[in-house]
Length: 137
Image (tube, rainbow, N blue to C red; front, side, top):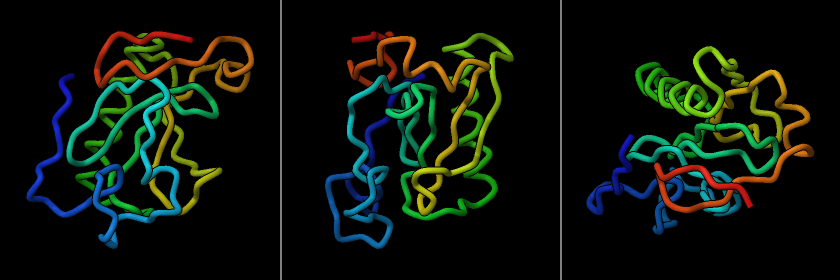
């Protein structure tokens, strides 16, 4: 998948440099969209990267909120499944939409069978660009 740069004419969304939009919460870690771990995909709707906490692929809506419209949700979950299957193989996990640590910003994870122990048993990934080969530290 190819990364797409956000359109400069579109309203500010989470992860964009502008912070004066209601779609952006300056206190939200997901709106910040810090690039520490591997990023699988990004477009105007969402980004998919390894979660800093559990080290599994996570999709994040670029709008600060909890209920994306159904077509947007479907598109985001499809991107998440693509990334999860890229990482763990076909049918290598499942989508988990429970927003545990950040309940006010939509995100979902692709969890494999070893997700609970993964962060202690393997080195974290690192950011090398969007859609590049996954590298660990």
